[in-house]
Length: 89
Image (spheres, helix red, strand yellow):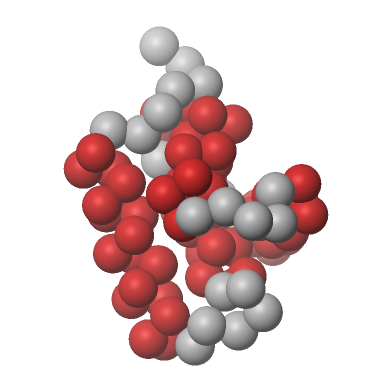
């Protein structure tokens, strides 16, 4: 799932859908929305902090771009690869 073109495309679709559905959210609110969608729970404070740090690093690499869409796509891709998303308890 890490480099599969289908998964990368789905991450991009998820990020775009989030911005279309919720054009005005704070980064914390958008992260919360992604966690609710992916894991049916809100993120722990440390998870929010890690996601914000990840987005900051991606912005250094990719630049802010169109609403930082590439950076949010990369975060969605990361969430697809979290064990909690892949495995059912």
